[in-house]
Length: 333
Image 1 (tube, rainbow, N blue to C red):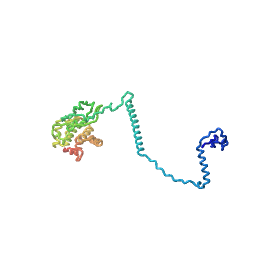
Image 2: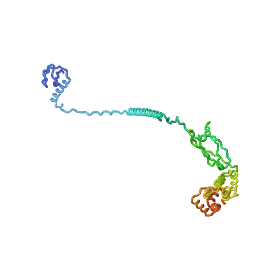
Image 3: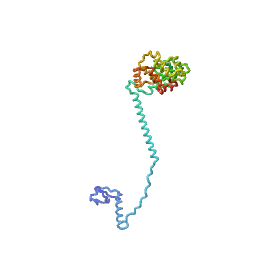
Image 4: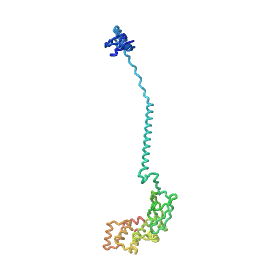
């Protein structure tokens, strides 16, 4: 359809109109155009006129229900694969960050110390050798002398010979009496650590003294000599005294008196307090308690002889000395 469109109100007019039928503006010089909208408007006006002639046309149109649309599908495999890829990406990024931090820390460790003292690392600090891996040669039995017996040990690790006092220390236990001596080695210095023990024997050459069953008798003899005489018995004295008390030729009390009231003990000129302290250690194998010590010193001050005092203590039925002698297999009195 060809029309003239008013430039003032955009109303469509016939192609031959000279004035706008809506706003009465002049249409002179307005171009004639094809108008689809105008055609639609004419169709609407025609339909309106037809509806006025046909009453049924005023009935509302029948609206059919819409068919529900199918739900949009969710592609779970695709979603899960995307989440997996995202997780892998996060792990890769985290690993890269961790590696970078580790390199930074390593660089810091290498540089710490201001150049004066290098940082201590596994490469710069060798581990110390456990001294229990060191080889010790066999130790032969040693003969009793009454003095401490030490061994010139030769310790070696592979082809290296260790130096006592530099690479290790040695501690002896029981190396003056007949019996088993325990030796403790402890690593020291920058190269050796740890510890271990070994043993060797001190023997008298006498079967009675060297019998482990008589070990406490041997210790009793050595202790009485050391306490009352201030020295260890000689080898000959040890063999004689142990054999006599082990065979029952002498009692524990008689042997103690023999040592305590010998000329050698008298020559030491011990005070009453010194004499009693040594008596407790030698005969009773313990230190004197203060109350008992002062009581016995008082008895000596009142005129009791040393021999009567100690014999009364040792001969008391069921007393300490009797219990001790019975425990080592010696007749007390």
